[in-house]
Image 1 (tube, rainbow, N blue to C red):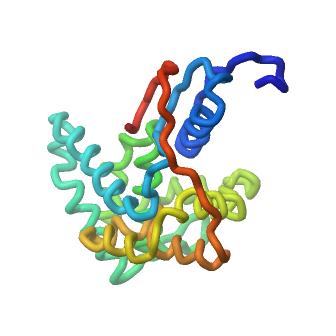
Image 2 (spheres, one colour; image 1 turned 180 degrees about the vertical axis):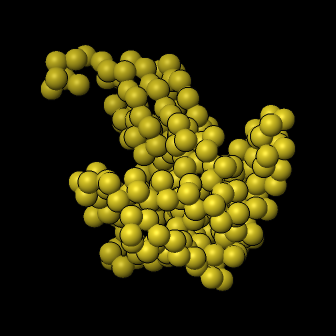
Image 3 (cartoon, one colour; image 1 turned 60 degrees about the vertical axis):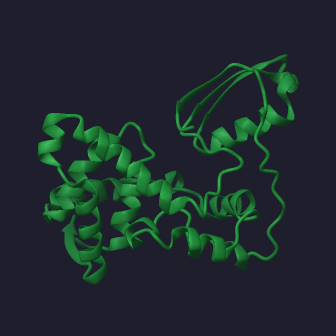
Length: 231
């Protein structure tokens, strides 16, 4: 802030940005006037070990919200079961469909990742029940429109994996172990273990060599903070 000529700043962070915000709040509170956090990832989160549980509970929260609405409840009465059954079907036999003359294979992993990451997008959250049901019923018009969007995405707008993997490994892997991750995720259906941070992701971190230490201490502060989602 001092380099820009400001004595204090109002911090706003989304997802990984919330973790950065809390680290700034912990390390340099003098420069922080207020904080807004959306989709909280706190420094002490066990992002690998808790990944399957977080996915399962996020879908459960969405299902509970759906059940509170009569139209949604009647249209999508068994969201968890439908999601898991559809994942199992695709895991046993991936399915092909055509988009713009190109054959695209729908795999269980792709299906799970789309549901998982859409759960983190508050602007698209309400599309998930329809998306899951459409794939369950083999209505690929829904998926076709999504894949066309992927085809149209410029390469420079895609996630930078060279940046993403070291970031995840340095911040999330130091306080984890392969044994702890596998034990924490063992009781969850495979459909919740293949998307997000999971055992294979941790193995990628180990392949980088020694994982650097990471201070996961939560900030303690009376600076005004607004949580838009998460806890």
